[in-house]
Length: 414
Image 1: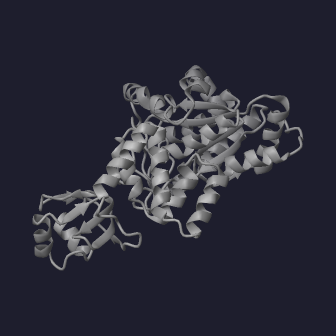
Image 2: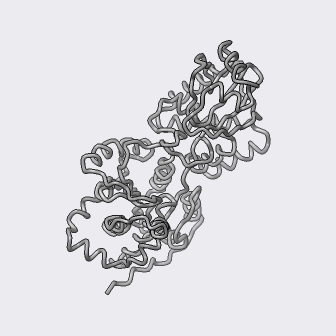
Image 3: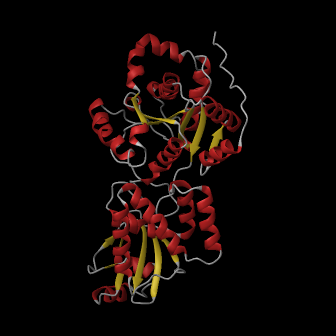
């Protein structure tokens, strides 16, 4: 029979705790359960014991982009508040394959593939996290010693009916799509990570909510105080529509060159800029509120976008690199300043589009022949760079397109 989980002892919620809670909640989708987490923060402040805040990432691919940095940024905020961050590399769970959000069984990775991907994972994450204050763990430490008997005991803690409540499993059941037996183990193994690490808070994307809740349930079975859960939204990519993804080519890799990174940030829409400020920027709530007041009072949104671009480049490269990227960006656009009110055009072209067709469909040229003539005369620029090749194919993404001195459009291909 399971032991009852400890109940957090009540501590006063001071203005300092309320401020810390506001920082943690900024940009988040959901905090489960907020009152419990407020008590954990208050107790931590009273006894001087940092909370244990966990993020698990399966090394299914070697690269990290700005979308991943949303949750890493939240971890850094927790570090700055004085709490312990556990960067958990799922070398064991990667061999199962996370079924979250998938309509088909994910092919399990080999140990060799996992090790190759994990090699660069933390080095990239450390561009956001404080390396010295981060605890790096691998879930094979406690998962492999479980063995067959341990797996059976763990499986006894959860019912099949509960597992099949997951949206992705339920959808596959309705569609008569296969669900492999090993996939049912994934939420249990992720939940057991929280038991092994005695986690106080677990972070993840909105698609991870079911798995995170399993962790709470298993901690109760092991007599631990259940962790709180912080889900973060999935960051929209450069197109402002789809989530950031390498497969959709609407991403910013955190190891991209400074000028590429800077230019991509400058290409996003003004509305998306504020979304990125909330989810990506390390600025305080008060600082962002002040920037929004300045925008409402008439400050040029381009200036605010420059601040965001410089902050992002500084974080992943250096302040000097950010200054150089700004100087190069301004040099390329000098005399050809993009208007603040340029039209935005969305074109369905998941494989990209020939430049002449792009100009025609964006209403920047009346015909493809006129578009070709503009290219040959050197009058077409994409993101500040002159296009010389009339056969060039423009990749999916968001691009600032200029024809001559007066025709502009922000074109979203995808």
